[in-house]
Length: 399
Image (spheres, rainbow, N blue to C red):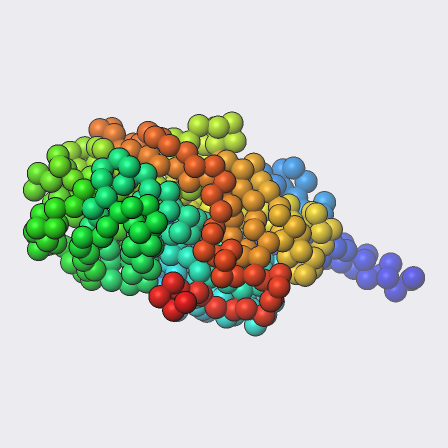
């Protein structure tokens, strides 16, 4: 008993605590080409931690954060994930935007048995015991979007997408949901990220005469395509829909002529109207200002931190097995994008999907809300309760 008392006294004297510190790791792209997303992800994490700590933290102790800037470089994710786990001894990791960053992180967290939260929309299919996805998957977004667009514009679809896994897997789902909902893909084009002249693609679209285009370029490529599409006069007769437009605030930089009337679907837009979002936006604005709209990955990160904290408090421990069991209990959270619920088998969220329409003021209006959309593909392919040893990314082409 005396030795225990001495140990506790020494810890307090050293400025610490007799209790182990609860620590999380954050790795986001704070500089480089992806920082328009990474800064908001990191801001959301810091704001969530501040709110949780103000309410008593987890297990009665404050959360501390170890942050790293991945600098929009894939190798930094591998380096900093290893450092956060082995040197900083984090209890959970929140990191990544791109699928390549997630896939660089997953083997490391799996080998070291650390809970990892991936807070971004993506093409879907990631499945392992240590990974928890709080963004929406392509199957969640595209199922409702394609059905809605066929009813709105007609059955003929043209796909314009980047030539890597986000684009190619998303295109698979467009084909799949076109069949399910009475549509037909009449053409498609997969382009390198370096392409800036879309005249050849626009000519193909004109020749195919679709009712609408599913436009999935990323970043500046997306705004470039939309401007050229509008300049060609095609918006009058052909609809444009996207599952990633607005995810990086493209609506702010695109011209009203190109952006007005464009349809997007995601798990969150700042214009979502509910009390939880009003409170979140107010807190965000008070801390960070209102110079730019809040993007969906910020809310994905906010939700991830709150869900992890709720799981720790429910488990009564940061023990990985106990926290995982709490998350797999169907944990829910009253989030800015509506109530979200972890699906036990797939470690993905059941969440609302919003279809919005661009306006002439660089913003959106919600035109339809789909409540509690399940990650159907991930639930079908990934059952981590039945088989916790699965560690893969399922792709529809390989099934």
